[in-house]
Length: 299
Image (cartoon, rainbow, N blue to C red):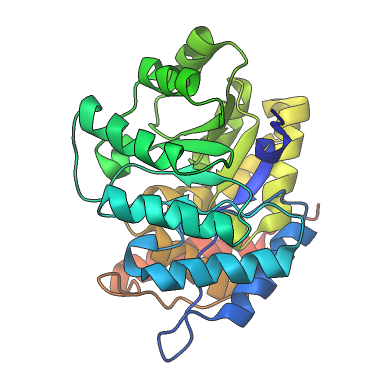
């Protein structure tokens, strides 16, 4: 089992929309290529940032097809989430057929449940694929929490579970997973403003959000903190933190797309029920973004 696919910065790609509301596949390919040129090691479409819940099944498959074609050997690792287990299983099979190199499996949308049901869902999806799996735990967003013991139980059952994206916000969870699993799992985080802390606790991969607008800075932050700890990165981290915190609020998709628009790498179009931010909320975000761009560091 090779775990290299999970060790580095992997963008959780936003989904670009054209003026007519359709997916902008030309920009999607260009954006993903820019991320890889900045030394990101793969891409994750169809996650929360990918606005998966507002995409049709066919749109999801087409997005993976576009990215596989655009990126060649670079891993495309789509998020697998749906309102039903059957749809999640079908999606896992469809994207594997399109050339996906791994899967990020999420809990069921819109249904907070117990271990019996959530493990049955996960097992059904895992049994439908031969691809390496990243287990995504985000109880803040999905109200379903995989405990460390449950994560390790699934990993012991399914050898293709290679990594866990632990996004509970509890840094102690990383130590608990390592205590129970040793080096069996690659530890990753999806919380932008806890990446340096996560690296100190054994994280070796980052599913990042603001990388969509700042890929070079994101890779530099990750690599410097990985190699030298906080002292090696504190100035860059201090500059980046106000931007990274925009990834940790309910409207993070809108705010990251607004950030992309501000650096001329995308637009802020979203699909309802999301709407672009406005008023005081927008002004506050733009102050953060404009201050960061004015003081953008030379790497």
